[in-house]
Image 1 (cartoon, one colour):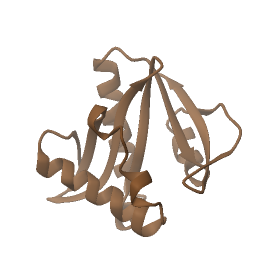
Image 2: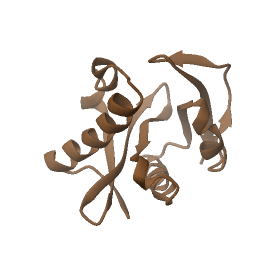
Image 3: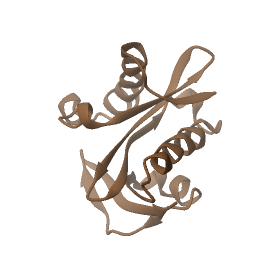
Image 4: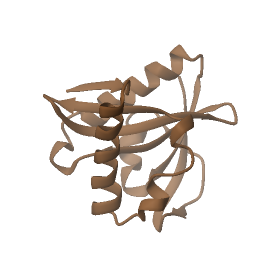
Length: 140
């Protein structure tokens, strides 16, 4: 499994493909909410198993935080370490950009995953695209 910063159009389309499968097809998030106005300002990430994209996410700077967004793993690749590998790559990227505070909005079912990576819940539950979330932060 290979997590990396997206460097070309094919890799970006691979990342979007994973996001569409997980968020739009599986979780019924409206397409116009999933692919949004922030795409061009984000650094995108994609993970591969052999030549197939299996995980994706994006990163941008918001209010002095590195904001980790749209983290997703295809159903067949969950619980294989691909999510952790993706998060490690994003955190390494944040450090290269001298960002030491990270923030994300976790779907509530994923809170244990992020807590295992050192993120702490800092908000009450809220809905995003009709899905319960809580904000989490981590200092790296």
